[in-house]
Picture 1 (cartoon, rainbow, N blue to C red):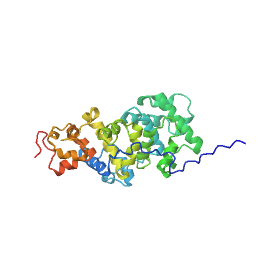
Picture 2 (spheres, rainbow, N blue to C red):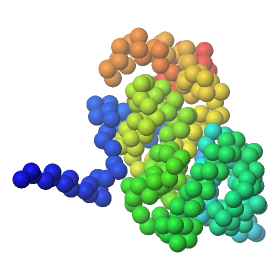
Picture 3 (cartoon, one colour):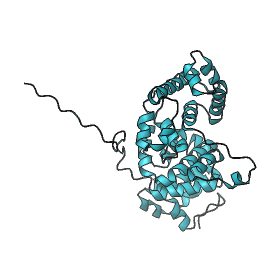
Picture 4 (cartoon, rainbow, N blue to C red):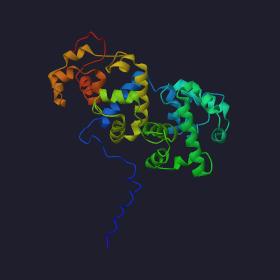
Length: 316
């Protein structure tokens, strides 16, 4: 009598949906490196205003500006609003995606109307955001799926789930990939996660935090494993902002120098002692200051009186 094949035990909730570290021997970034870059970018840009409302939600309080205003602060967006906004932001700018979302809400006061409408009104409403047919199909399919499973179109229950549970829930829907899920986790669920968009991917590779060959998916796993939870939100918002505002970094990653990101010629005067970090002198001399933050060499520059001042100034 033939043996019955053994059934595999289901994965436990703690391990299902998690991925192994793709670069176990890649030490960067260390907590100290993450803190140094966070502080450097915070001093350089200040905290970006576009992300300030989400930061207040995470802190669970009002800013001084909120308290001094005569009008009440705007209500926090629902999780579902956040997910749809994030879907609309794919392959377009933040400003355009906000306009598309406002147009959608004006055309459809309730999400049930979006599901029940069989024409092209949804597509027409979000056309300004690009890829209207694809996004409309994904939004409608997601809303329909939520209503079928939950009985109503609402995602507030995700607030009570763990990060892995949220990932499993949202990944069931077509068109909702790791970056979209990570953005919903960080911005709308106030969870500790680190999305990897184009800016984060490029800049973290330039700093040596991930290998230069790292895909966005593997970079996401590695960075979330390495970056301390209490730094993820600020660091992510600041790196994204830096990638948007710095034209030099948008083309080729350099270093933060005197309010401008560029190759710092004064690095030619760095002493050979910098190679003690494991880089040969030739490699060190090719690095910009922002990259030095990333690999932990910048504190050495500070303690050895390598001051950021006039770019023509020699190291003493």
